[in-house]
Amino acid sequence: MKGTGEGMKVKKRTSIKTKIIFSCMIVIASIILILGIVVYQYFSKILLDSAIQDNEERLNEISDQLDSIEYQMSYIADYIITDRAVAEYTYVDHQDSLAEINEDVYNMKEVLTRFVVINEYLTGISMLRDDGVAFTNSANLDRKYVSDYIQAMLNQRELEKKENRRFTNVHEVYANNINKKMNVITYIARYKNIKNSGQINYLFLDVSYDSIVDIMKQGESEFDSVILLNKENDVYYGDVTLDNEVYRQLIESDTSKMIKEDKYIYILNINKNSNWKTIVSISKSKLFQTITPIMIAFVGALVLGFMIIVMILIPILSGIINPMKQLTEGMKLVSKGNYKIKVNVHSNDEIEELAAGFNHMTTKIEKSIEETIQYEKTKKNLQLELLMNQINPHFIYNTLNTVIYMAHADKTEAVEDVTYSLIKVLQDSVKIGKDSICDYTSVEIEIVKNYMRIQKYRYPDMFEFIVMCDDSLLEKFIPKMLIQPLVENALFHGVCLSEHFCQITVSIKRMTDQEEKDRIELCIQDNGIGMDEETLNRSFLKKQKAKGSNQTRGIGLSNIKERLEFIYGNNYTIEITSEQKVGTKVFISIPVLDKMIE
Image (cartoon, rainbow, N blue to C red; front, top):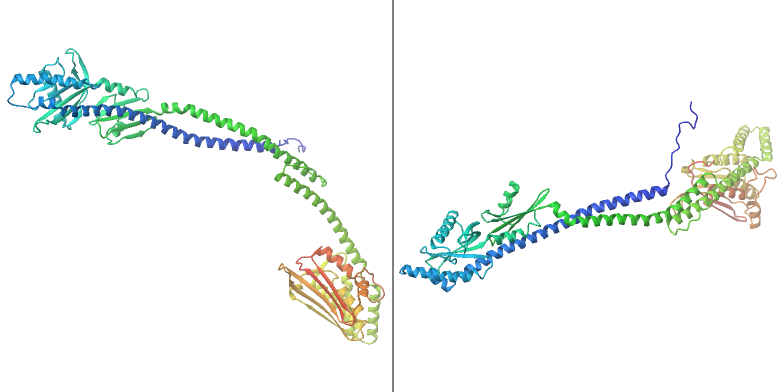
């Protein structure tokens, strides 16, 4: 068998200070972490939405520039259509000669050139009269080229069934230099001549495609991709590299739209009053690049806040824990039996109240131990006193003489009755000192009855003894030798000295006090000679010993009061009233006891 210390490990204890600080740090760190995550999610969403909104605004600016070009073309078209000179030259007079037609073409070149120079986006103007005559502002282009160019656009327009005003797709056209072509998009306006509404003319405004490119390139630094389409979803600018499904969802939409995917955000911008659809894609990583510095600053603020809280918390916790350590040390000393220990804590908080409670507790424990010791001493003294005040030999002697007298008189039944009663009284005397200091009410009543049965034979025809008790109190406990000494005093101090037949009454009732608690009310009353105040004090208020041959025990009222106070504390009442030639009454009120007091 191993020794008691072999193989045993000493469990290392963690101080409460370490536990509290560590727990607080975990709680604070958890709160800050959760708060950080929530705030990060919240603000990152706000910042992300803000970044998206900024990009939408930038896309709107691009769209506004494109809309501005279309608006300017529409405005110039209206201006040209309503111009008197243009209306005159584009009016078809079937009686005009070829020379007059050529003159109209020449004059229109000057008029149209004047319109070209007023707009930075406009590179050329062409017109087609109802009779098929073509006009242009370019001096280097012959009429056949212009007619073929216009007719090609019109054929394409009729094939696609376009509306009255629209932009064409990107195409090449000769500029002023006949040897050089340039990319343009053409704004076509079909209108009625203001001089003759029956004549349908066409106006063609060429816009430099480079102007469109310059506008679209403004967003390339901010967007991953930029695509420009018309209402028919013809691509004007950019490469359609979007996912087919995403692209299909966007181009089929009739209104502006946003699609968010794992890595990219796609935005479609549509101006219902214009010809354009603009689609941009933005990578979320690029968006988060703008908010990363803010997030880093936020995380840094959280870490710094955590450190500051910990630095503030440690001294506060130390101020709380140190008094608790004092209490712990005090408890250790108390566990070793030192109840005189006092803990001095001046924290002006609950810990100070706890320390005061601890000091009060140790004081109460010390006092309780002293009271317990005193209680045991008092209990032993009372038991010893009861033992020492056992049956008086003179009472036994007188009782036996009475038995002998009745035996000579052949009163056999009386001898038997007295002898039986004497045995019961003597049995009770033997129990005192070794059993409890309380007994059943029924037992105490039986003792009194046996005692009075003996006295009835010794003092015949002198008194009547009556006992009245609630049945519910017979199995309740009352102090031993509480009733018998009082009845005995009533007999010898009141009844035996009276010249008339007397009555001794014992009444035991159950009553309820103001707090609705059950109590026992005990009343011993006689109608003997009574006592004056001096006799009352001498006979009942001083300790006495049995003298002579009358009393069985030397238990006076002061002895009874001591035992009542020992058993019930201050929760009892004892009152004595006596009047000469009227009688004496002793009233005692005590709580109901359901169990025996040892």
